[in-house]
Image (cartoon, rainbow, N blue to C red):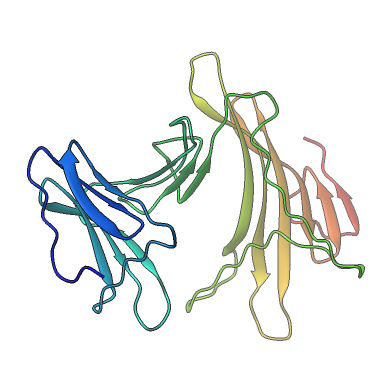
Length: 220
């Protein structure tokens, strides 16, 4: 075992082969016939660049294990064997898969036809499946609060991101025991979002956003 600090000069190369430490020029190389362990009593392992700490790995007596960039505005990137980046965690707490500049908390991007694909798979033998769940959790719940949205966008001929259609839900009533909800289907019509169909407490409205009957048609 080597206890303490091993210091290599600017042009030195240290090699440990079969638990033997040697030096020569160029790099630091660790080669062992068994596992290579980094064991710090503090639980903190630092990776530095020219004497400045850039990455810290903290593994204490309890969960979690923490990977922490130690330089401001530093992202964490994960690359394939050929150097191609596949995922990035940015300094502003966003995750990009296929993009180094994610616009949202989770951003998937691909230049391949029919991708990216997001799959939720359940392999249990019963009749139940997985689900995509939107949950509006607040302390000031109120009627007409949005519960969730699915929005569909495309680029127009001016290269502008444009809404094409949307499915969204709001609360009709938040009273305990008398809850009610709306489900809206809207599409763009001549540049304006237009609600085409509404589902409200068992009623369906076509062209009407507050249907009063089981099937309610409104002439536009």
